[in-house]
Length: 239
Image 1 (cartoon, rainbow, N blue to C red):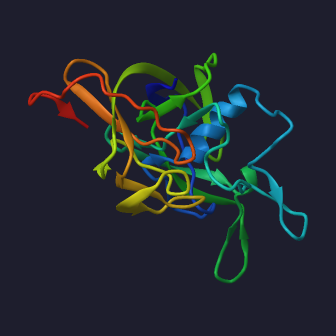
Image 2 (image 1 turned 90 degrees about the vertical axis):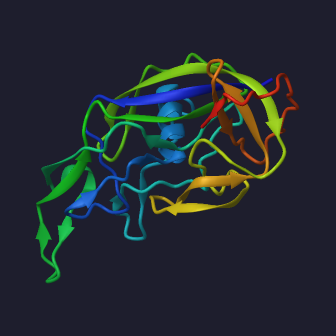
């Protein structure tokens, strides 16, 4: 039987990532499921020989690009994409070009050794969901972003209530390569867009307390459990 958790990630260090290391880039207020799942996988020391973030291009020059098909990196667990729940606060910092492969090129082809990047501030909190098939001793600290900043991972177990077998908007952004999405709003991110306000055909309704309920979509290749424990009252808040 699955277990479902509400997870929160609180930044201890500034967070930066973007499609390319370009000067004046802004970090999106979302965490891609690829980033969260690989961060947890690395913290758990699963497949330590694999380095999914580092590849070489055709000239054997290392680049900080991922090499994976989608965000489902384990059949034991899955962290959904997360959205920022605290106010979005950016701050800018001059970053040396040689740090982590960030070299900036002018229109004239000149290489710059420094550029301005816009980070999301520490203390910011992201929220998503964990679907657990096999229990792990989940890490309390993970590393995220282009500069591997530290963040706190906190989990709160939810009670699964029922399976919803009709089109409904789920409570979290989804990875369209993992979840069967009928419609939604595409959020441009690296390595590929995620879907906000996603309408999915099958999801699980889970509750945190007597009034707060969440709708969570599972990876489409996983078996959907049949659950029907309670009826929802008119006073229920569904997120």
